[in-house]
Length: 287
Image (cartoon, rainbow, N blue to C red; front, side, top):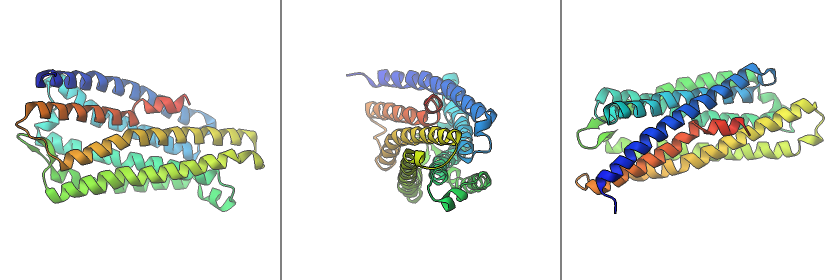
């Protein structure tokens, strides 16, 4: 059986090298997505492509302000500064939760919009507009910015446990409402349901009288959104399940081995979740 020191070393090196790999590949993939959807005329003024652009921008934001800040400070100082500095703990809490709230909602918007734009019913197709996508995104950003204010209020540094939520009532809300519902069940159900409906619409698209270019565009965007939703579901489920369990079941801080194992599992689950806004975009682009 490996010692606590060995496990801590494995956690450290996997966190650093795995983190840098995700940051580099993620930024490259997201920048490629943004350039493709912005410069190609076929995607310009298209609301589904607009949501994918917004998603890629938020992915870059999360890679920089969530993953990169942790990895670079850990590599520089040998530990995560946000676990010892109350200021950095609160700043990172706000920035991370803001981006973490915007991203799954944007994925839901893209799935719903693709369903509307590929619908047989003309009234539903007319609801899918570029202006509506811009307005919804603006409203989402404002609401997410306001909603995220509570997180830095309740997150603080504890000498032993580090940066976390120590208020029992807010911890209950964070784990069972924010994690399980806002980030988990709700976006998973909505995005999966509407992406499946969009897929069904595209399967019957050949029966409709419309230009071949438009058919190909609808198929391509639907495929991209399907892949994005599928990988979102796969990566977020383990994270939500583990974080909910971790927040409501404390580890004995006097047991060095148990703490080391817990940190290793947490790191692996977190890095797997980071794939959601990192190499995922490469898969979507090359689909």
